[in-house]
Image 1 (cartoon, rainbow, N blue to C red):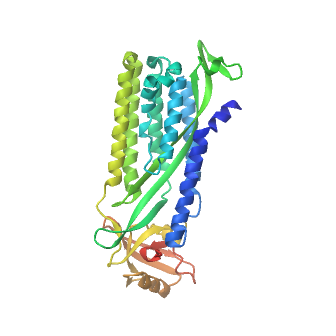
Image 2: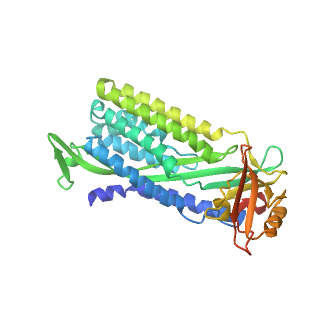
Length: 370
């Protein structure tokens, strides 16, 4: 019961409130701008719980079976930094900061009472960091719903453009072993013993995920780079783990290198967001799609934000009125020729419900309310 309560500590509640806040703000923004919610379902919230818990079970099992004992000071710093980064998620969010917790645990005077010997826990922290960075890459690859929030702005050449925000958080209720010098000595805290090793189990909720904004590309393009960045960083952290285990007397150096890797990943995340060559802007060559509603005919056709509809049912379209007129010409079937944001041409088709040709799930610039 006490272990369960630690998993429902401040990080869990702050993470839940932050995720719900951004979900509510997204719906409010979309209904104000487009008079409809692009995705009415809490898909991102469910993905954050299901994906996070699945990963937490794996990492917790590896940590307990592998004896990844961390000092209370390190866990305290991980918790504190998690709270700070969640509260700053409006600026951006990513788990690049994880190894900083180790250096703070060593050098902050307030934590020295429970820091222990860095030589004993540095490799364990680096192992945890490596696993979490790899988990970030895996979660973004598998459990990242494409729920992007478009904001309409005036572009540099006068045409309206769409700027996209993407936020996805994952709740990882980790169960970690902690050295027996603290919690295991408390008579009311359950302690475990394996051989000569005495330790207690404590819950450490960790929030992973992503919060970013893109202008000249869709968020999914930036996230593809994030996946590779955290995959490489995770493998580097595991290599540092081996070094810290083999040469523990250089614990601070290994931690310092890990912090440099983390900062480099944070910088790489930023530049991944800034990349791109094409704005999602209004065009006279067709009808630009700003967003696609999930589980609609448009989604089933594989349409994406940024696509330009060139032909609809063999008729050239240049605005919404022409698009809907072409749809009404064949109200039970829709054939489209679209141009992707990268210039590639795609043909797609689907059946639609007769009498509702406008409910294809395509959001365009014309849907914006002044």
